Amino acid sequence: MAPSSKIQSLVFTVRRQKAELIRPSKSTPHEIKYLSDIDDQEGLRFQIPVIQFYRCCDPSMKGKDPVKIIREAISETLVFYYPLAGRLKQAQNRKLFVDCNSEGFGEALQPPFPCLEELLYDVPGSTGVLDCPLLLIQVTRLLCGGFIFALRLNHTMSDAAGLVQFMTAVGEIARGAKSPSIAPVWQRQLLNSRNPPRVTCTHLEYDDVPDIKGTIIPLDDMVHRSFFFGHKEISALKTLIPPHMKNFSTFEVLTACLWRCRTIALQPDPEEEVRILCIVNARAKFNPPLPVGYYGNAFAFPVAVTTAGKLCKNPLAYALQLVMKAKSDVTEEYMKSLADLMVIKGRPHFTVVRSYLVSDVRGAGFGEVDFGWGKPVYGGPAKGGVGAIPGVASFYIPFVNENGEKGVVVPICLPGFAMKTFVNELNKVLKIETGQSFTTKKSFITSAL
Image 1 (cartoon, rainbow, N blue to C red):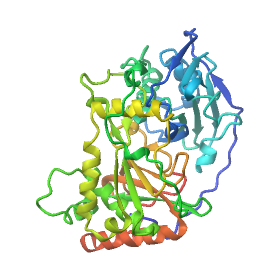
Image 2 (image 1 turned 120 degrees about the horizontal axis):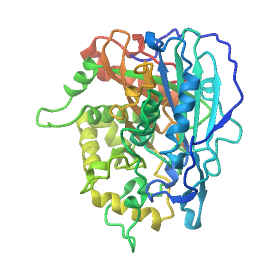
Image 3 (image 1 turned 135 degrees about the horizontal axis):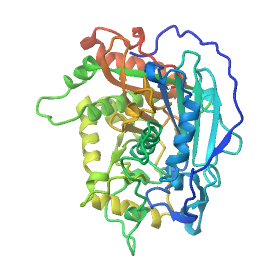
Image 4 (image 1 turned 135 degrees about the vertical axis):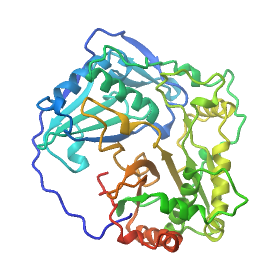
C-alpha cells in the first residue's frame, strides 16, 4: 500500500547498442508545422518518460525479436506521424514550430532490466527541447523472453491521449496493419488564440507568485514513492464526506485527500496560499468536439486556491469542494481564453510555488498498447514529479496489486523530511476504515517507476 520496509535490489548486466535514428520508411513532406498556443506554453517544454513492461506469454511470438519488429513499425508509423520525426524550432515571440525534415529520432537497444536510467538512456544531444529528437524510444530485451518499451516525449508535441494514439498506431502496424485505425490529425490552429486575443476567464494557475519564503520544494533530498489505493481506501475516503455532497468522482476525492496530506507534510505558513492544479482533457468541451485523431495537447490546468491553514484545519469535504469547482471551470470559452492568455503574456509557466499538480491517466490507454505480445504488465508514466520543477506533479495510474485487486497507484515525490509526515497523515485518514497502515503494506513500487 505504501513504502514497504524491505526492497530487494536487482542485479543485472547491461549491453547497450549504439543509438540510431529511425526515419520514416517513405518520403514525407518537408514543411513547417506550427504548434498550437496551448502546446507551446513554458510548462510543457520538457521531456516526459513513459514505460511499458511486456511478458513473453504468446507462443506465436516465441523467437521473434521485439527490437526488429518495433523498429520497423515505428519507421512505417512515422510516415503518418511525420512531424514526430522533425525538429522543434522557435520563431518570433517564442512561437514553436516543427521543421518536418524526416531526421528521425533515437533508439538505444539493450538486454536486461531494471532502473529507469538504464531502461531509458539519455543519448547525448537528445535531451533539449529545441533542435533535438522529439521522441526517444528504447527497447530492452529481457532474458526471460519479455521486453521493456521505454519512451521519452517532448511534451509540447502531445498530451497523454495523443501519445497513446501514436503508440497504438505503432502497435497496430507491428501486428500487420498497413495504416493506423485512427488517422492522425494535426490542425493545431484549432487551439490558437483569437484575433485580437482577449482573456475572458480567470486563470489563477498562471499567477506570478513570488517565492518569498523559499517554499519551492528543495531538490537535494527528494524521495520517490508510490501508493496504491484500492476499493477499501477509496471507500474510506468517501465515508468522510457528508451525505449531502453527491456526484463527486474517485479522482476528486483522492485529489482532495492527497493535496491536504501533502500540504500538511510540507508545513507551509498557515497564511500562505496553496494551489491544486488538475489536468482536464478538453477535447469534448468543444462544440463540435476536437476531431478524432487530434494528437496535440488539448487540456487545461484549472486551479483551486486557498490558504494552507484553511486546507489543513478544515475537513476533507472543504478540499473536495474546491477540487470539484476547479474542474468544472473548463469550458470551450475557458480554452479559448487560455490560448489568448498564452499569446498576451508570452507563454508563461503555470504557478509552481506551493502548487501540486495531478494528472489522471487511467483512461489514456497505456495499458492497452499491444505490439504483438499482448497487453503490458505495466504501462504508463515512468515516475512522478516530472517537469521543469521536480516534485510538483503526480499521476493516477491504473494498477492491479499483488492480490489481484484493481485500483490506482500514485507516484509521489517529496523531500525526505516531508515523506514520513505524508505517510503518517494518510494513516490518520485511512487506518480506522482499512485496519492497516500504509507503512506495513507491500504495494510499493520502487523509485524508478
